[in-house]
Amino acid sequence: MNYMLITNLPDIARYVVKHGVSRVFVDLEFTGKLARQGHLNTVISRHTLSDVDTIRQAAPDSDLLVRINPLDGNTQEEIEQVLMRGADIIMLPMFADAAAVRQVSQWIDGRARLIPLLETVGATRALAEIVEIAGVSELHIGLNDLHLELGCTFMFEPLASGLIDELAAIVRRQGLPFGIGGIARVGEGQLPAEVILGEHVRLGSSSVILSRTFHRMAQSLDELKSNMDFEHEIGKLNQAIAQFEASPALVDENRLRLRRIVDDIVSQKQIAAAAAGSAS
Image (tube, rainbow, N blue to C red):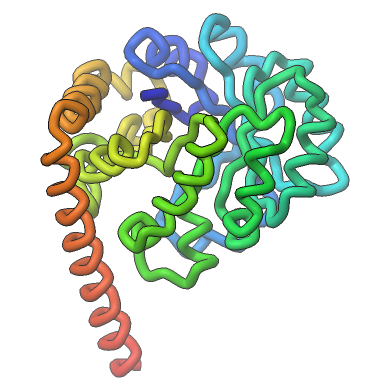
């Protein structure tokens, strides 16, 4: 499994790539994100182009992934800037059709790998066309914005409903690797991380973004180390994956467990929303 960690702190980047992280993730995406997710308890990064330089120097031997802003009049120049600073992988967010991916791939022109971040309804409908675009090296399915656009109550509803199964099948048929959303530490999360990992194994996912529970918003390496044993936490993820890979029956049981948990969470959220509505 490729673990990706979002950070612009060089000491943390240098440390995590020695302890299980294969991709350090600089997140330049800001356009429209506050409007979409500002009401949620999500992390909105404030990374800059200079952070790409900083992380490249801190972790020269690891894959450097840079998420750019959604396609607009500045995208071609933004691509040139991140390539000049050493990006190995460029992630394109919030596109709604194959044309956007094709344009970005042409601008990259083979100088870096391209991962389209599938997180809109339009993108899901265009997936069969997107996977055939030259230059697309991998896909990542983003559950946060996707579940909002679908009108879901809970972020992991698309995973429970079977939608992600359909998308994963399209990508697998093309022979491309793919990842799904993010993951908390084992034993944490409203939907336990180990349950989500079982779905990664079942669907054939090969990458995941480590959530804030893996850094607790630490502003230094010392703070990160005081919060957790990072290497041990990565080890627990790997152990959970190994258990699922060794037991198809466990994977099947886990699928049913995930559906039950998601159904319960959605029901609780709907009851809470109804109560809040009647109170107002």
